[in-house]
Image 1 (cartoon, rainbow, N blue to C red):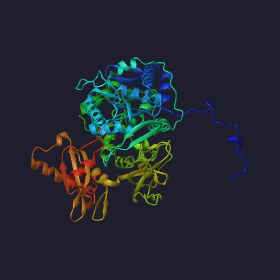
Image 2: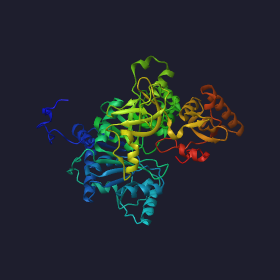
Image 3: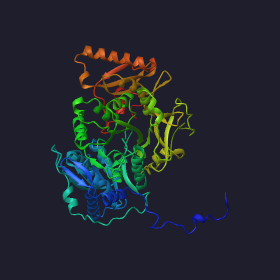
Image 4: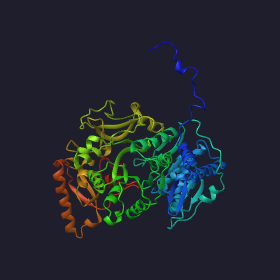
Length: 560
């Protein structure tokens, strides 16, 4: 190493001319400057341009600032995928406050915990979810917790039940704000921009804190990894409350795209919006894509272009990837967690794969892939020694990430943060293997591995086999206690509507057929010993809730 002074570090300091903190607020400024009249939002009869969206964000920032909301304060939102949620993703951080988007399917006690733990000063709530919000506020009031300022959103597209519980309606509130409000970018790009809570199946949820720099970078990473063109038309099938919609609220203005809002998942509604607005892109968990694959052909009529779909949230079954290919839609497989801003790895397609048959392409595209360009590291390690697993596609270890799109840590939980960052990597808790080309393939969550007679069984592998049967809509495999083997696989199967058996005899016959089907695709010890039919429990993002099924059958990991 040279011992003389480095001339490139002398008199070349950061200053306002050459350094501005990275923040996704810059993207909405850019879209409003360059494409002010371009359509930014479609929601029922509502059409708003990027110029309007920028002015609305400033109005929201203005009324928040008037309530002395700023640096270090939390603004919570219980909203579906509507324009007000997009407003919040820009207006809240313009004040220096942190946006806490709350899962709309949570119970009142969990919502109460999140409001209490985050110290929310403002709560913006859609009328549909006012009952749970009202109950959550009552729980906190009984504990002496000061109530936040509550703002109602009375969405004109929503015609269902629900009362106003706040002090003012959202549109009336921001109408009093200044569309030219002068705001400041964050003093430090490391400042928090979002707070998202994990599912909390083993106790209270953990609050994942993400920063402006990471949100900016992951928004750019979405563009790079999906090769997003200028002016995409993006349908909001993915909840914006989930990892801030995988950062896509911040991605869309970077490419001056159009947000097509959607309050609920419904195949007819989704396909109708795709056709009406010539949607080019959408995201979702495998169950969302499966719903569209299995929709009646007449609902897909007229969609004669290749819609581009991004899938994550669970390992996509091979049958789903194959189904998308047969529809002529282009699927991109990504992987990530709340702690890494949503997607942080992508199964980058290689030209050599084009010469493979369908089964070969499905096998390659079913992997979780390689890191986003804006992420520094992704690998598989022995969680005890932190040594990298061999690239043999067989040796299982823990999947770990490192880089600029990893969370700041867990709010008010230094012990959990330290454990998550052990060894200088973020530990996902997912088990996977490394292939010779460096691509990661998930095998299971650590708690979902079934150990039968000393042999490890990947529940994902068993589910993949079940999905190959034409009657299966959704499948979840968990460990069931067994006196001889310790654990054996038990399959919960949700059938397609036209394949539900009419009689108990037909149900038993179909169960036997599925077990025989598994024996054709799996080693005998990996096959389920029993199949149970019924709706498989899922989160609002379509992830199957295996912890509920484990509890149901008394699995060893039932509490996880």
